[in-house]
Length: 148
Image (cartoon, rainbow, N blue to C red):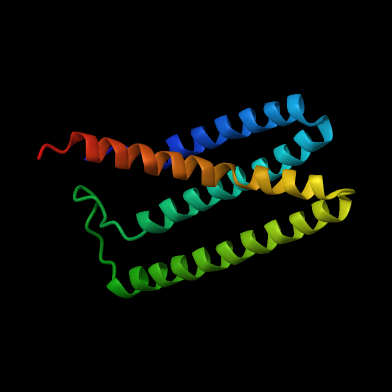
């Protein structure tokens, strides 16, 4: 079994963000690097928040530990809690998406050139780069480890 965690992808995303910001500053300008940084922070924060919410949502479906007290609880409240968790997760997802949209709208309004928008898109792509590298790495290890 492969042991790739989302925390590793997050760490790799921060690494890409630092590399892209530093490279943008050296190659282009500090203004370009700032937009890369803003886009990257937005993408990584959204990824982290989504990871945390999904982990909490999935944890709500785990059975209680066996050593827990056996109280006279009914099954219906647990079902309602699961539905509430699902609705809460969906609401949080849409609120996070709306917040990202509003932040991007304000950032794009502050741009002066098309280069700034390209820099913002480059920053927003840091998580995608990390996921792609992780996927290629896992696929490579899988195919190289096959004997036959």
